[in-house]
Image 1 (cartoon, one colour):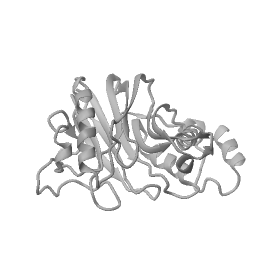
Image 2 (cartoon, one colour; image 1 turned 30 degrees about the vertical axis):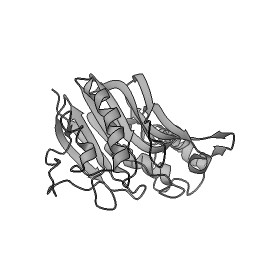
Image 3 (cartoon, helix red, strand yellow; image 1 turned 180 degrees about the horizontal axis):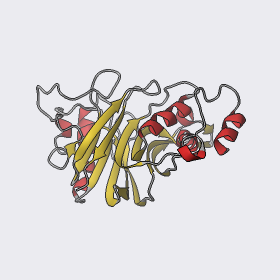
Image 4 (cartoon, one colour; image 1 turned 180 degrees about the vertical axis):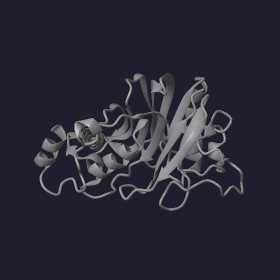
Length: 267
């Protein structure tokens, strides 16, 4: 009933393809599944948040890290996930700037822009850090502790400087990597704007493995599945103290990055 009311309130055509699920069909998040997605700002047209919710619901991760996330967009996505798909997520924000052009709002109260983590389980010990040098735009990481597969894990969500700024990214990884190293069990989600063999990612590889076992920083490595519309792997699920069982990459019309999800082994 709540889902049907939501669609009626939004008006005809506002959620194309929306089919409210009956109560018996309400979904639950997959306990061992984590995901990362740069949802792109701006991308996807006026119906983008319903479309983004539909993409996330198709995967139903326990935890997903979002990048280029406006707070208002994330709140709308969460509403669709709950009211249309029966998926209830908590949220933690790691906004690195407040920008009216990107995220709307009033000139004196612009919307927050940066990272967001959605988790089906409660989150604690939230930390949001802006990198000392963001490059052409403020960048940072968000970290929380939550449950994945019923066990606590530290989850990081980051977005590094744009692809033409390798030295800036190298400095950002030097900030991030020691924080990851403090934890025996950690998941690092994000858009690193770098392919595996680029040197700025070198500090990450001794700490954690990529969710794709075939993807390693070899100079001639062509086995990494692209995660962007321009056929490069920029998005990662790094695992420390955890091992991957399977992974999936979903292109989407609502972003120039693909939604990357990973099922974990219980260990």
